[in-house]
Amino acid sequence: MPSGRNRLVLAVLLLAMPLLPACSSTSSDSSASPDTKLQSLIAGPQRSEKNSRRDIYRHPYETLTFFGLRDDMTVVEIDPGSGAWWTEILAPYLRDHGQYYAAGPAADDTSEEAVSNRQGFAAKLASDPAIYDKVKVTEFAGDRRDIAPPGTADMVLTFRNLHNWIADGSAEANLSTFYRALKPGGILGIEDHRGRTDRAQDPEVASGYLREDYAIALVEKAGFKLVAKSEVNANPRDIKDYPAGVWTLPPTLRLKDKDRAKYLAIGESDRFTLKFVKPEQ
Image (cartoon, rainbow, N blue to C red; front, side, top):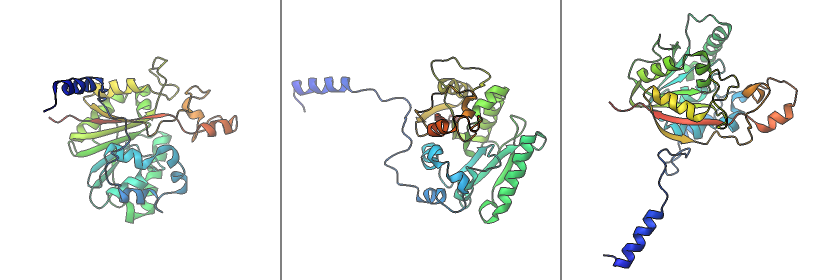
């Protein structure tokens, strides 16, 4: 037993220790063994050169391990787009032991963008059946469709989409769809362009930037619980004040050649990366 003096010193030290934050800001568990399968696929020949060039901004390994991805999971990606950036990684990773759902535009969405995305994604899957033959394509249309059978998904992932849903008024319905698809204890992973905290959130999100605290409140209102944050996709060079909003920066470069070198030097946007859970019931 420690002496009275030692007990007093110990008590003072314990009181002086900082409290642990409620949410971790680390990108992954540093004690975990590396996922060599995931690392291999990120560096694999199935990825297009155009897509892999963006790894320096998107940090696929750190992002996916932060979310807790395993190869035996059922994972839904929302709106993978015609370029299938994450599909090139997720589809082969989950092919043998898990399941990958690609929730794309609904068949009754006849907009030019939706038609282009459906056609481009279908061509991507057809280009290499040995990798993409087990991908399940579903329709993403708010709460009008199921992106996966209810209560079956271990993880739902969405990248740089939430700001669009807030702008068009579909965020509440979409979050409800994700909640329905996930198992109790399932993970919702969200990444988006992080807005400035010294400005009120524009409800129309015209700049493309979304305040992190605004996003968290919105998602938690839908029933999810924030369990962790990561700074893996942070970019301190991004001042978030440009003539054409976030689309001034690469990869869009909406101003084309005007100040191109300046915006390339900044790189892609500063992004928050958030991990939510559907509470156990």
